[in-house]
Image (tube, rainbow, N blue to C red):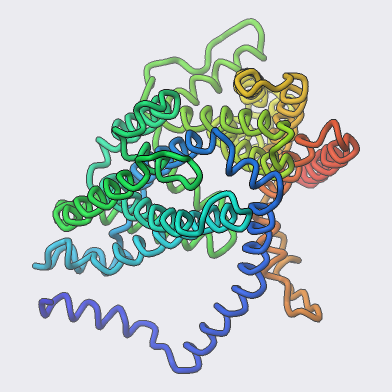
Length: 500
């Protein structure tokens, strides 16, 4: 390491010297979080996987195709993520100091790259271990196949890390590559004969219980592919662009600052790309009907960021499909419904810019000669229209494909869509963190103030998950859905009345 790089690292490390007590407190915090948060979540995941519905889903004939789709989507998502925040990234000071030094990129950014790769690989390995152990505990597969699938999960993590880096190095080509990977994954899942010729297909062949005679060959192919990608990693890191690195480091530093202050909306806004498509389209058109004018305005505004719009529509379609599958007798309906609610809430983000605009100017002098309530209703028309069209189409197609009755998926999708939109509106008018939540909340288990503030920050996601679980159980427990609607509408109305 050069003298300049060593000096920069010494300056960076000297900014916050840690004592032995600080390190001991960090170890204590890690252990407490593991016991209080990680252990219950891990236990709940294990009970869900080993339940009758979970084993039935994991050992179904469609498990291989689902695995292919998930892996292809994961790698496509890693490519897209690298455009905004890559794995090879230091804080802004170190990024500038090391990137402008004589060090090669593979040496300057080796540490964060290895840490990111270890985190991703640990996550994919844990998921693979959970699936393999669940199937082995039920006697569906032998333990050796479960262990082999853990190795497959680790290889998937390695490939995901390299794809993440590739998206950081080639941000312009990442979109086309991600689209090609995902479309190829869909085609491979639809045409099982292609599984032997694609990397995501190899993961499907290695799925425990698939019964494929080519499982070992698929594992060897994944090992060879991972080795080739790992060898190419230093070459990719040496192509990192200084300007892009500095921009990513600055955005990430700003986003983490906002997230630390529980302002997750502002943190997400930092990564919102500027509109670039359709700038010549006139958004505000003098139409006779005001409702149509607002609908056209919001539609053109969404089209100007086509990437966000496509991701939002795909998220809505995924939520509709999950809602339909939640009505399958062999599936854990409440869990799939909750997942659909979370995905739907996130997917509505690119479609509700108009709602956030209406909420930001509410209770102020009317800018357009329109009252606050009417302005909010007008801006809600575009996401509502897209919501109904996409959710109904996805849920009906998925239900028909799976051989399910369409009444349940249609009812559940519509109910979840409306409640998710209410949750988005409630989140838009929520306002800043109330000062009362900054006070300590002493309990016999300790201070729960941080947990309360975290729940307040993510209340939209939590309420959407609750609404999704209730929508999936609409025929079994309609009062649960009614209760979810009352809670969401009540919270939204209260926030609207007390908007700043």
